[in-house]
Length: 560
Image (tube, rainbow, N blue to C red; front, side, top):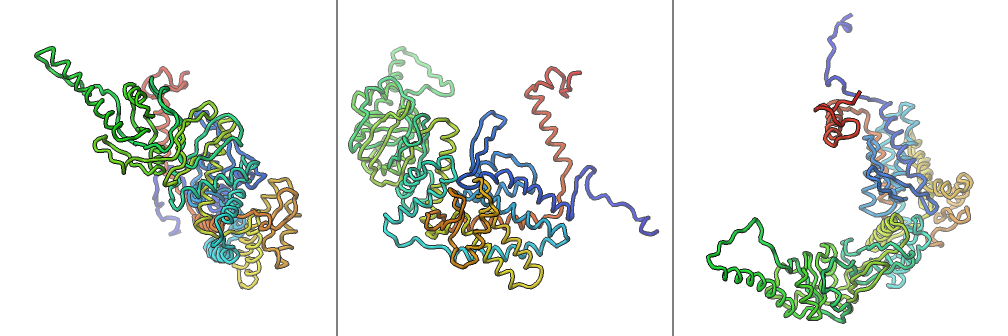
């Protein structure tokens, strides 16, 4: 009776949506599994592509996990965690973005029956963390170092890593061609870590094989004035002056007003303006530079002036390209033309303007510091070239990682099967429930070879049985899926390699995400924020004059 008379306590605002307990954890797991199912089919060399069409009307064709996850615009709060781990894998390693989402989804899928049977999530989290620690140590044990090899050997090993990454992309058909190009580009920038020193320029037309690598800098011809065609288009060992100033007659700003008492004074003011620009141009010529590049405009007067003196100039060069020219040629960007000394001028062996497709490119090659490279990509459709650029970005990241952390592991699902076998064996030595949890973690790791088979149209059960048998025999640690025949093969011997850091990062991130989602047992949705969003959307529609709200008063009521 006393219990019935207890007053009801209202903690949260009316309309607040709260869901908690076991049902909430299961709901979060279901949401994450749905997200993993979206990218599931994109894994591996036979993976399918996704075409994503956004509200602006632009279409993206991609099978890169991180790109798809970014464009999906996921709103479920728990499933957003999977988007974040895909982004972190992309920025940290570059490849393995689909793998990390799949693994996280599979860990959660395996945890679901335990949660439904009443197991406390913290028990699962503890076991998953132990399994992750054991798996990462095993990867470090299996990994093979490529340190101490000659440059040629290293090049060939890095090209194999790049080819493994590219095999699952749209440009997989030309993976050898692009792999060697990527390795040359990464080796060209040396120990410098800045990715922006490798430029990728896209020119529609031609085929993939027309793509080429410039050991230096290439950028599209900028907007030019009359007189440009009279300038020489090729130089040997020129001096290069880089500027960040305008070389044109400037109009007065802020409605400047000058009062004259004598009409003759007007001419002296006009002359002063001309003298200023001519003084600047004279100083550029006297510096001895044969090429003048500026981030700001170079006007028609300056263009003609330089043309008369056999000097090449280009204005409105993008900041990124100017910085790459500075890094390659050893020049320094100047904000003034006074006291231009030889030390601030750059140089290169050959400068030429070359036609690529229907674009003209300014190409600087044979640069002294050699710390930049530019890949010029050719291909049919714009979407295809965009996807090729994303694929090359992944390959460049992988080669950089392999150079720094020079250990590699066999790909094609081999490392996943070996970890699965090792964890199953380890689970037998543990008493209690955690044996079951580590077993489920081991089973989840098999999702990678299983999905590789499914995506290629092979019988995954048959291939996995063969793989389990081979790995259990103790001498098949390097055996993975043979994607061409549907059997199994030694991934190491077939040069299907990936840097160990990719796998370590993927397992770490996937386990962390799974543990984080399992540890959430309540979600509270604030009604105010939702209504505020609704009002904001309505106001935006009214302001834009959307078709349903046109022609009515402030409230923007729908017409009857």
